[in-house]
Image (cartoon, rainbow, N blue to C red; front, side, top):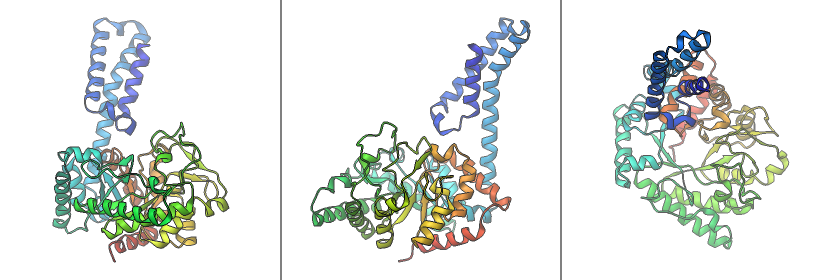
Length: 425
């Protein structure tokens, strides 16, 4: 049993940067190392190493956590140093495709100044770090944009999840507004008016503190079951507007109009739709097995309506779409992104992935996902949860692929053109 505990601690130490092990960082790391060394000292004092092979193996097992911690830290820091010292021209070509969450202003400011990122994602902990006030966050965002200007780089995308209802990451201090789903039962004219008002309020408040993009509205159809026991984080039943695609389109289009009137970019999400899923992409692989002819007239109608009728961008999720490409998530499928969305739907706007730090993609060869996403025609890769930590190894995937000639340069050039046009009227 003692040996098993030592092996578990060694494994945890070796994987200390895994997003699931955030609680073990900082003080947790120190506890693992100190515990390991104390047990080693105790075993040596008791002469366990003299008791044959078993005793020596037990001693070795308890040395492993400290060694694993050292190896993990060294490997990570070397990777981080490599990213920060990457050739500027190559780093900036890749950096214009990343949006990253952060906790440390100093760290993200350096990424912004060096052109290693295109934007930042802000949420509740950023409000707390800025003193809990809108003014504090406004000042921080303004300082980041000033760093970009001083470096001669384009302004940062500054994105947030401010849908209303349970996903209102900047409320407080911003207004806590109801979810769009509360409007679904109103008469058509009334719900459109109310949705536009909500969009204008969100847009006005977000723009006032420097937010340029809202990851809203949700246009997934509301699932049949109000609660899915395997939906731990998405909670799409509480966030989706309606199970009627026409109602979703009407409410979402009016909301987007309100956001756009305030100068904030909208983002329709999460294609190809989460409403029919029985698992949560935050943690598990998810498959959408519904026939395409059904999806075309139901789940996908709001996406197609919004992408044609507004300037909204598209967030693509980590769902395996059986009707088109069952072998990989839509977020890095060329058949889905280039074949369906770009060519068949003729959508030439910006596509951003859902957070890459999600189990459906993060634990299934993240480097392949990065390379394939670029090749598929995705424009922005979102690294939100634990973003500042996860950014370096994910960016390293892109650096390695660029150096090995594995990136689709033609697809990258097309993406750069789309990104350059996003600020044009």
